[in-house]
Length: 444
Image (cartoon, rainbow, N blue to C red):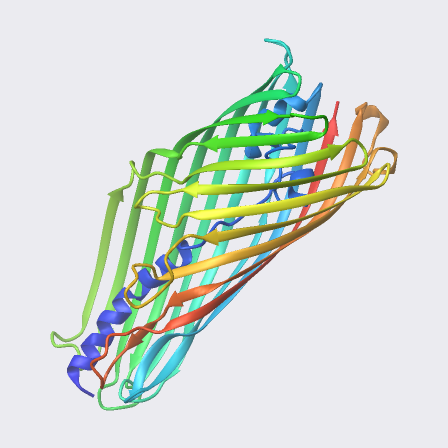
């Protein structure tokens, strides 16, 4: 085995954790949905928001609340799976390649939101609301495991785990300026924590003359605190018809640190300096990076205690540090099957605005997502959780399910031992995510 080939493979393995970390962070928009009515309609709530979850979708909707409103999205159970075939390839003979798959999975069980709003009558018909949202609490596992033949005879076992948690605290205010015209503002505090680890074991020429071993352990940790602000409007030009608009600023990071520790050991005859072992710790500050801003515009029609329909679009603005602009399109409908039974359904998309992945593009990944939601709500006398001691004006229990399908392309990695080509494979990537949620809505 040529020593240059071995050293080239070693350099590739040293970069593998970075490839995995970049791959796992490079998602489109996760599209976690909150509340009972909003989640059931696929998040189409900018124009017709009328409960305390309007804090997230459009704070102007708070002005629709008459007295007090409590919304709890108790839990969201979510499972994601993704398999990128032949993601890591090594040339066996000229023009032929052995490939290993990149497999990824994620199981999340999170309390998604608790929100409360109350009419305060400070400046007329105005409402104050606050809430805690947990849009992300994921544990993503990725692995590349297998054996490749040929000139580079390699056994590879690489695993990566990334845990991400995001907590949003929102304070919002909505006011009815005149009948049919609502204005709302919100202030958001965000705490983000991400930590991950990679374990890599690679055996070169196992059982042969040049049998060698590479072992790496990598740990990283990111903590960030950020703030953003939002402003929304709801306008009804005719009875039952509503137009909504919402703008949220970037989440400016007031504090952020990232730290990485790397332990590596190389054993065997292919290393020019003999057996090696090292530990490396680095830390950096990312205080001034920002999260994307967004702008939503929607239209909805509601007929009280009968049916409602809404449609909206959202554009996520990013900067050079987060170059993946995303366009969301959503639509949803609700039907009162009975006075105390409501069916809701929705459809939503995430269109990535990255350039198509090519050999010359700067993007390693481009994915578009499509999703659908379906839920049923049982209210008032039919609600099994209703208690007369609560003295609630209305009480609804909702259960629902969401499905997301992602499809796109990713640039894989190919290591050459014979030819001099530098082209990398463009691979098809598919993602499946299934989520179930439970929500409670109480008006006092």
